[in-house]
Amino acid sequence: MIFDNHYIQERIKKAEKLKEEGHNPYPANIAKGISSAEFLSIHAPLKTQDTEEKKDETQRITLTGRIKFIRIMGKAAFAKLEDSAGLVQIYYTRDDLPEGFYNTVAKRLFEVGDIIQVTGYPFVTQTGELTLHCLEMMIVSKSISPLPEKFHGLTDHETRYRQRYLDMIMNPEVRESFVLRSKIVSLTRRFFEEKGFLEVETPMMHPIPGGANAKPFITHFNALSIDNYLRIAPELYLKRLIVGGMEAVFEINRNFRNEGMDHTHNPEFTMLEYYWAYHNFEDLMALTEALFEVLKTALALPDTITYGEQQIDLTTPFRKIKWEDALVEIAGVEREQIRDKAALLSFLGSHHIEVDSALSLAKIQEEIFDHFIEEKLVDPTFLTHYPIDISPLARRNDEDPQIADRFEFFIAGKEIANGFNELNDPQDQLERFKAQAAQKESDDEAMHMDLDYVRALSYAMPPTAGQGIGIDRLVMILTNQHSIRDVLLFPAMKPEAPKVESGNETACKKCGNTNEDELKPAKKGKGFFCIDGAACKKRASGD
Image (tube, rainbow, N blue to C red; front, top):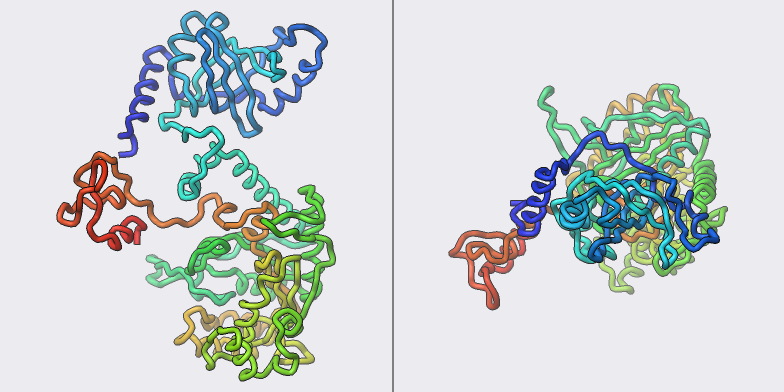
């Protein structure tokens, strides 16, 4: 059980002892004192005071925070309290606290991890640290699970993601990253509102999945006895609003795609999508650049930021390069071979890359892009004029019907955004849906037929451009994080393997298997391991 640990049991006993001493370990109606940052700022002048004793005993300041460190020195102790604003040092002695409190409570029952409230006056220690000299102390919330021993933080990634609360307790910089994420979302929302866009909410459950090529999550609507799909994109609903007369709309919300997980993919993620009537994809690129200028200024970012070992120049205007030009200039394809399937297959083969020869020209070009171009788009880059074959919702280019008026936006080799002139010809859209539906047998990510959306277009949608921006990936770039899990408060995880006490001689120490016929004794120490290592690994991973 979760509380069977010996150390937890000892802390539970201390919580009971607090009750016996008349101190509720979980009191209510506690008003927080001033923040650690306010304390350090307001009383900073004490550090420059020209007196032998730098203190102000006339003050009574209350601080509230979690104990992160304690050093007991007989009749006195120093501790570090942490709140959302940072760390502050406190000092308390036997003689300055109410009679008996130091020896019975503060010294014996307060521990690292506990949240306490203290009241006292500010002073500066001999080492020059601004500190609160405590005259009163009380428990606010008793921690019965001990924090990891290392004061410098929790480093195990698996534990950090599963127990984000513990990660934030031990690694304050993690909290700072998520505060920054919140600011980015807030600034983005304000940017679009100030540009005249209306924020809207569209359904999370769709009767027909659409708006992107992706495999959906399926759920069941009991009241109507029908299957529904968690949305893979809000696009088709937002464009219905454009048909209805809302000429500039946006939504910041979740999308769900039943796909694999890696450092840039999570099955649940946050997207900004916006649609702008009477504008084109070039307007969207200009708006994206304007958004970055706002973010840079508000977040005090330099023109060149560090992302891992890369230096990324955020100076606008950003680079723009056409799809076919990138194949030539970056991948090294000969210009005359760009639309020659056989030549492109030969190009891939010369680099020992085998692909299905039945793929369309655009799909083969996409293979070249994946292998030779994407990772080289380090500085912000708009890749424009995509093949129409891989742009089922985008408008055809007037001069070249094989090309879509579309771009994707890349930073550090990662796709950050996708935008295009929207297809508003209902007959063309119907034919493209039919072509996508024909691919369903071989491609489970191909789009479904959405006849109601075609019907909406039949009532006339004005010329419109739309874009989706991946909020999680944007935050990754601006916070120098290299896994999407580090910018999601609660990323998707496999079920946690059962935790088994090392002395339990009837269960596998790795996966918790209790079938004695499938166990063998551990070579060293107590306990057992599974005979079938592969089955054990599968059970431990939750598969």
